[in-house]
Length: 280
Image 1 (tube, rainbow, N blue to C red):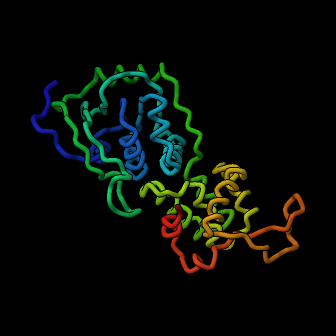
Image 2 (image 1 turned 90 degrees about the vertical axis):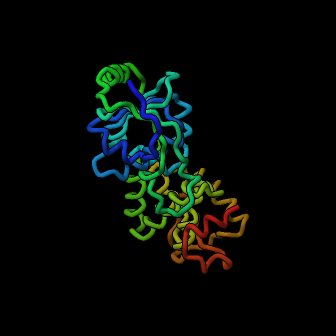
């Protein structure tokens, strides 16, 4: 199969637009997988996508909560399928449009910008074939995936997490939480993703007990993990706890409920991204 003389600079969105019904991705770098997940999530008619990679590659790609949770949404709708493979093949995409070898992809976290960064338009350089339909490669890959083990992703779907936040609290708190989670990922923040709901709760003076119920109900984290995340924020004097305004309400253990609140220095801050950037 012939190769073009000069690799064109295109985007993952271009690959999705021309893929047809099914797209295969083999042995891509974690940053490419991360960008692809974002592109699939924002594409109007994404192809059914099968990724084959080593377990460690998937682990690294889905480690940021935002990416893992978005991927879980795609898996739940059968848009994305992840297959374990030890193949040493060069990174390629295969679809009806051809066989495309991606030689560079920009990690999202290295791009300048804000939460509005569109991963679908992240530039990539790809070496394309001559446009022939790679029927043989598609036939081989469709067979290969039936013999592979699926990659098990345990991060809860992002939509479920957000819906649980809205149902347990309200729409505004849900949106603040969503912006915070995405900010931690896109800006490679020093703040752990578990800090986000704790800071959001402090912004809105939510009861710590209710936050713990949401975390476990949505499978976002355990109450123990949430407690560990609260400690450094208290030590940095960003948040504190106060007695609930309804002291008659107690936890099942009989203890008075506490609400999270921002300390005096941080009370004027009403933007979750600014709070996250204050975490050391």
